[in-house]
Image 1 (cartoon, rainbow, N blue to C red):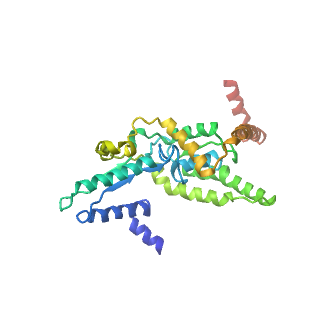
Image 2 (cartoon, rainbow, N blue to C red):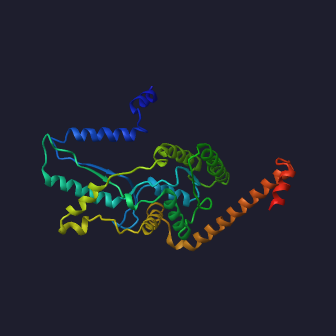
Image 3 (cartoon, rainbow, N blue to C red):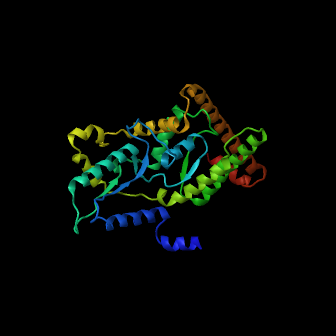
Amino acid sequence: MSSILTKKFLGSFPNTYTLTKLLAEQIINEERNNIPVVIFRPSIVISSLNDPVKGWIDNFNGPIGLMMACGKGIVRITYGEKSIIPDYMAVDVSIKSMIVAAWHKSKSNSLGEDNLVPVYNSASVSKSVSNEELLHLGMKTIEQYPFDEMLWRPTIKFTTCFYYFYLSTLIEQVFPAIFFDALLDLIGKPHKRLLPLQQKIYVVTMALSYFTTKTWKFDNSNFLGLIDKIPDVDRKEFDYDFKDVDITDFIRNAAIGSQKYLFNVDETKLPYAKKLYNRFVWMDRLLKTFGAILMVFILFHFNIIPNAFLHDIFCYF
């Protein structure tokens, strides 16, 4: 019954999150003549730009969580369009601008029937990069600062073909998770089970697929306009202008910060981590080479592709 009612109430909305956001904004708008209010909409909030320190983060939500899962070798494929440019915003920039927005509204004292609710879209727009570039920058950092514990060589690929995603998830993530869980159970080593984690990752990936396969554009002019409203005496603490931010350095700091603040990575183990990373690189290459040779052998041995056809191909080259 609840699932039937949920679909009816959602209508064209992709999930309950977006619907409840709309309802909350509607309530705010209805109360605009009674209390001073603003609507503040941050995009995807990720690691800090500067405060409290560069790269600080305290959760696995968003692209940083995916980046870390790739770095651990837990995730190797994700459902999404690699060329789209999602919008990300540093957590400290969002917090500072939120405080400035509330302060600016308190100074205006505008209440009445003609009062309009100011809307601030905390979006980076021009500073955002594509899914592919974001993960590429993250993987380059992971290559320089790998984890000292990983399941396999860090890598990631995008697809919008559900069947390919589902099959690859089974082969590259679910089956290895079952194998490692069984192996560690067999030797009696305590561990966090990987199969439930893979199930959770799959559910979250599918829930976000509506957003990861589409490009979203935001008008952040009101948000940027707030920067000029900050008094000179408070500019040092609350200025959030990010036009000069180097996106490569930002992603690098985000990746390193995630390792430090989410996984408590021991920096003294970096030499060992690099050796482990290189070992998995070679193991990955050997496994792929073996798989290619095995496939060619099966094709020839069982005559799946006619020998005459293969002969014509080799003669052509």
